Image 1: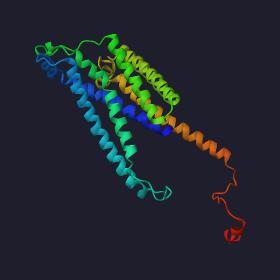
Image 2 (image 1 turned 90 degrees about the vertical axis):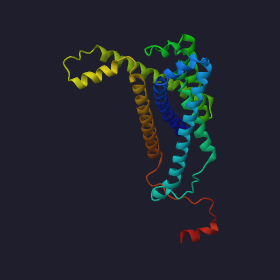
Image 3 (image 1 turned 135 degrees about the horizontal axis):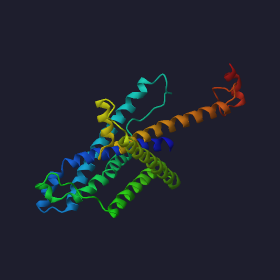
Image 4 (image 1 turned 120 degrees about the vertical axis):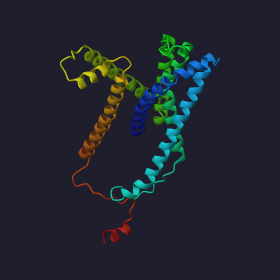
Length: 272
């Protein structure tokens, strides 16, 4: 369960990158979307069109991930024969492949909900004025997007853990960690914006300005980096805890081989 949830955190980190990529891709399609609206295409049809394209891209990426993982699982035991026990491992596991496909495509689609919802608000006026930006979403639309993200994270955690309690705890922990990191990113942006940058070098001045400018990716970048550090620290803490527990419970003169269900008549041959 722990390894499955660690993999899910890594998948959510990829989801943050997907959201940024989809937002940039859709931003380049605003002109085409405005033309479609002028031709009479309904907003929900436009959202459905680009949602299907996003899902197909997520499916293609997930298929590539399944193929790479299968190849690595097939060749890794040969290179690690001196480190791993000689246990036969089936590289092709359809159930795991289908789960990976479902989670990969689902997370890609889930984190695309926010940028896709903004397509409804692209004004047809953009055909005549390139500076016409999409309108701001209302509170109800934002609440629906947040609810969809929370439900998706909980559902993915339940698929990985098989426990409602663990899934709820995982989702709550992810929300709390992401909230703290997002708050830290906002404080960082405000601190950078208030710095006096006249006395620093030009490169540093432009770098600080890019961090604090409107629309910068500071918040998602800091959140993703923080969650990545969280995963590494969690694995290190569990490794240290397991190692110390094993060292404490294991006697110094413990045997390294156990023979189970030996009969008394077999003992002379075993001793020999």
